[in-house]
Amino acid sequence: MSITINGSAAELPSDPRVSLLDYLREHRRLHGTKKGCDQGACGACTVLVDGERILSCLALAVQFEGRSVTTIEGLGAGGALHPMQRAFIEHDGLQCGYCTPGQICSAIGMAEEVRRGVPSYVTADLTAEAALTHDELRERMSGNLCRCSAYNGIVAAIDQVLVEAVR
Ligand code: FES
Ligand code: FES
Image (cartoon, rainbow, N blue to C red; front, side, top):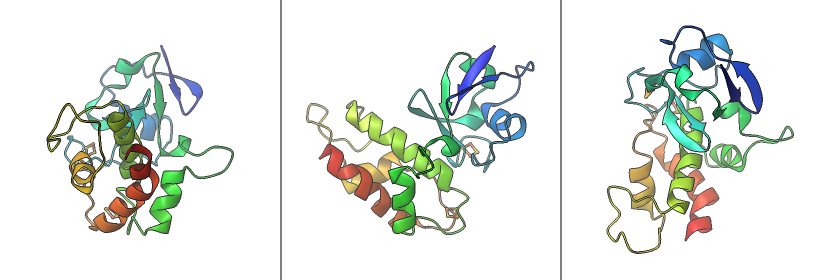
């Protein structure tokens, strides 16, 4: 059983009880993905599976046989940071940084959801073209908590990278 992680094939664990989060951190030594609550409440463990954001603490690694997982370590290309990573730095979208990998992966997955027209709880008109207003952005990122409360910088960073692309 194999899985692709950040573009490279890897063997899945023989123990089907291993969460995707523990597999990434403990088996693959990819410590960028963080364990906060380990019960689906904080978003620190967010990774992308075939471009969709998921909480890796609530998933079993073996569920993703044949799928492609991207973690914070796999976002950049050619030694350069992903634009979302650069924007978080430019806008001080972090303090301690513990939530940051999850915030960045979540923001990238969220943008793709908007592009596909997936509504959120605050989407008023389901027939209108998706617009990433600040209310929409905050609602769609509400699953990613930041104990340092760097929310203004987080929103500014995401806004810079994504809002203009979908407005
Ligand atoms: S560690 Fe997965 S949601 Fe908190
Ligand atoms: S930057 Fe510290 S938890 Fe978000």
